[in-house]
Length: 274
Image 1 (cartoon, rainbow, N blue to C red):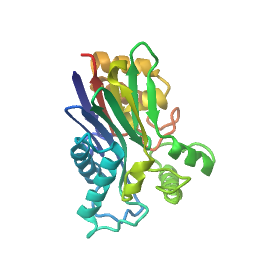
Image 2: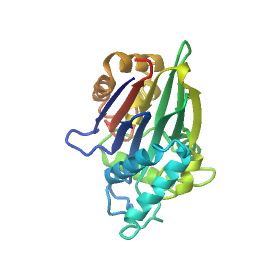
Image 3: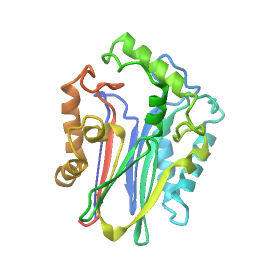
């Protein structure tokens, strides 16, 4: 069994708001999300603090295979709440949050949980990969029908559009008919996408923050088999390096409209058969 992990902040010297970790038979990636400048969060803690704190607690909770992955996530959210309820407004719609991709070996199967737009890829023996991601946030954005693409990254117009998007999305966050993400509501955990696969059917499992999956699902520069081949041969660090090259070729987000030139990127690659 071979496990490779890499993570890199979107801005050199910046704080990486992702969290990636592994323990025996357990793998996870969290992608922290907060409010852009000018939008209040109601919390004195950073997004990085939230992702790391939730990630560490989730790693511990999910290590008990007698506990369902969704229950482990719900308990972990409750525990994070208890750590900062006295200092922060947990009812604020801008509270720090995180997407989650989690995989666990339980007997002869690999269980998985995905909440929000983190990505889990099951590399199946002799079959096309199965890609698991939660597209409800994308559905809400499409429903809002924002006019036109985001303007060039870095300008005030771009920043204003991002603030407006976040404020409008807050109404739909962790609500029925909206989208679900790990934040302050434990019940969000039970809205995650879950499943299990026989261990013998898998060559590998990859868990990616959306900053590490964009060569395949946003930029269309790789297929999922291509992405898995890079991970298999050169590891997550090479995948992130290639992502940075693509982002640098389009710094203003003209070819690929996006919120930031470069996003935090984290990946865990578990080669089942090595």
